[in-house]
Image 1 (cartoon, rainbow, N blue to C red):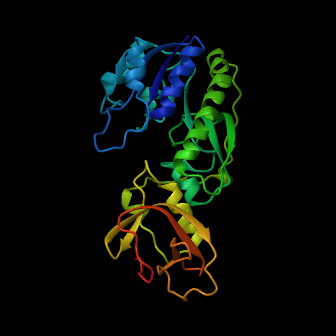
Image 2: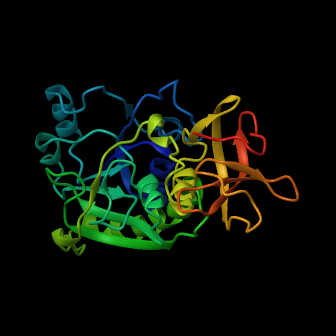
Image 3: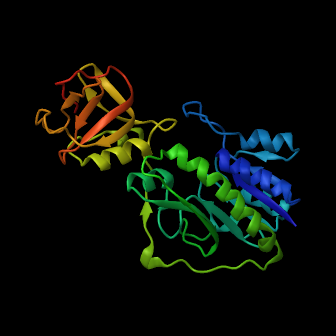
Length: 297
């Protein structure tokens, strides 16, 4: 009863360790080559698999006929995908006898698609989780096998949430993998009336618009805080990266600045006025800290 693992990132490492801990044979690992332009704060699936004596592949086009044939020769019972970044086409999905399942970091059917952790924080969600689901032609739309929810704090960053999702992912895999291989796992269709889908994000999507309400800006900042590219704006000294903020009321005796106006409180802490008249304290920035009276844009 073997599994072929398509995986990358820290959750991919967790999936590999869980498979091995459960005594499940991993006949091969498919992963990605590291992008030198990417911030590599996570573990290497390729290194973990190599250390375990498992054959590793990192094809540019995994759906090409030679790779479909290679997968067929491996004859896995199940295909498990965790943080793998390419769509697996029907020819690949038809190979494993027990089917193909994917671990997605949201409570499906909400937040299908790309960058779900970031999007959930951008929208201020109080709850997240992971979902193990069957793979179908539409991304993240297949029947649900299992889910585990986690709470999200109002100041949690994407990294905070990611590390909270890691043990949830392990719990779901430990519960479900043996049943999937035995053909006894439960499955339920997703409720399409509750579905939402989001696309990919680029570093430019981190630009702050100070006309937004303070809470919306705060949610963007924490959603893309390092090791993601970060939120940013323009200040008197040039580009200012905003890595952490704290919402706070605008002082009654402070100047009635327009959005983006900067004030310094009695302790010298910089507070920026948002579009709803509330303030955002700049807790951590990269760049020249703006003086009182400056305007960010």
